[in-house]
Length: 290
Image (cartoon, rainbow, N blue to C red):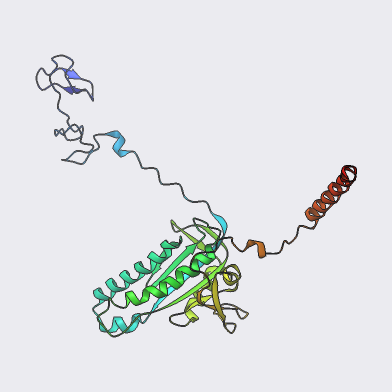
């Protein structure tokens, strides 16, 4: 209950006008008694809740489900960072590297990928999670080649005669996608191999794993490398360098007709049987017409 300042009549909590004299009732804090504007949700004097709805917890956004996905993972690393950091103020180095990584991230986004994280002077990007496209592997390689082209622009930003170079590693395969530490990401051997391909690649090169090459060889030109000894891998890993585009525009599923039909012997047998029967049934009719 609250007392009317004009007639002292008791009124129910939340009443805006006195039910006895009609005077405007002041909105007061129930904890400290200080007046507060009608629109106030918290007391300006003691911070107590005035509007119970303001204290209601905000429901967290629903988490993406944990699932296995076919993903292409890209790692890009700025080479030359140490030499630049040695000769520049730390704040200037941080600003330069941050600007460079975000410029590289723009190419990831332009080709439909997602920047998973920035790690020091590295970018980790995903193509196929959380959003999938039929040509994610090709998008990843095109993004990587565009990132290499963007390095000319990035190197105009430093006042030193020490250009950055970029090493990119790409790998495709099945991963487990979901929340790790509250953030959506992917885990699996595919991720590790992509990181290793980047670390052993040449500055200025895009080093690609076998499954990525198989998925993109209609659209990307490659030079095959000697199999690589990667840290943590028992066997040598086949690898290629992407050296250019076959076509300027993404190919999508344009080359599907060149792929052989595999594992459909029963279905093809049924179609052949139906075709033979239809032809047999048509022959008498055709002879009658003649």
